[in-house]
Image 1 (tube, helix red, strand yellow):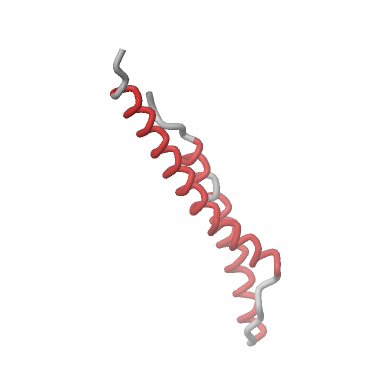
Image 2 (cartoon, helix red, strand yellow):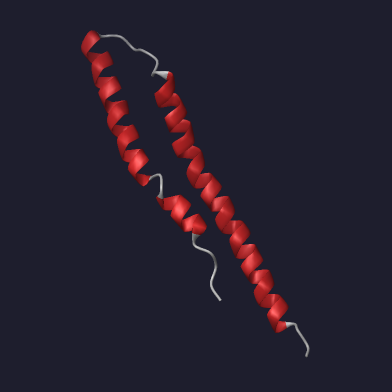
Length: 82
């Protein structure tokens, strides 16, 4: 019996989003440097960054929950006396 793979999928899912976020963040920073001032990033970049950062944490929590339930099922099977 193996653990579920949903947490690994959720952990790998934001990788393309990290790439897109890094590109748009670099473009925003380059535009602000050209004009010589520091500006705050637009709200969509802030929201995207927050979602991208929180997604791996959610995946790690799911991974931990899956691991605990998997271990409990293994122990229940080995402790059964028929």
